[in-house]
Length: 306
Ligand code: NAP
Image (cartoon, rainbow, N blue to C red):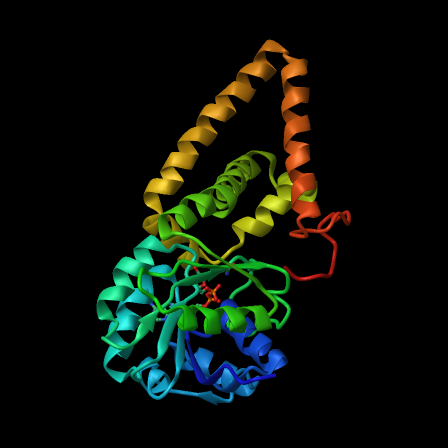
């Protein structure tokens, strides 16, 4: 396969960067992968497990001479990292990010990008509740979407090259406007995470009443919520702080819908509940037909990751 980039720099070495390093190696599409992380501890782990070809002491050092730099830090840290690497970016390089929110990241990063360097924001729709340099795996992006939110005027060749890299890492790539991305993700990911955090919080309060029964008898529904609610606290704090409007909009709609169902239960309106659950079941079928999940029963005991 043709080499797409000579040197890729990954800034931040957690789940996403680690999976990218492994997926790029699997695809053989880049010359060298260099990486760096904020803490000496993460850099030491990354060195120990051979995550990248080379681990650098700082983001500035990693970015220097790279033709692709990918920011893989929490959304709230993107601006500071962009400011740090800006003077070291090679002319003609591409800078991208993997942040779960796009409009706020563009606002934080774009002002630091020097003339002659291309900023191409992206978001791979793949993840697990695990974090850190040991959590990555090469298959994370297989058959998942990676959404690009290019800024106006980005050359087609820059987009084409980065698209080819993500496709090489197994992803299906699509482009959309950053605001649209943030609204879609508020529905499909951000609000569901908030609901899971809330439900586990409710159970935690209840647990104080029923001792350990909530944990002991946790059935699939609650267990699934706890998996989502175990996601990285820093990452998710930043997602809600930086996708505020879209999340509040969807949360408002969610609350209204909850009242509709609450009323149906109170009124004993079984017909309404049955019709509602029939519609939601069809959505699940659509996701399976689109290849975004499998139909295999999972009672929380499957050994598969993701
Ligand atoms: P992660 O496993 O927690 O790793 C985060 C990395 O960022 C670590 O190397 C950490 O360094 C570094 N970091 C944290 N705070 C920082 C700061 N203030 N300044 C500089 N570096 C900092 O996170 P991840 O899951 O890979 O997520 C990374 C990005 O991908 C986030 O923007 C997230 O929104 C996005 N994303 C996540 C998922 C997911 O499901 N996890 C999916 C798609 C996109 P240390 O280890 O040294 O602390």
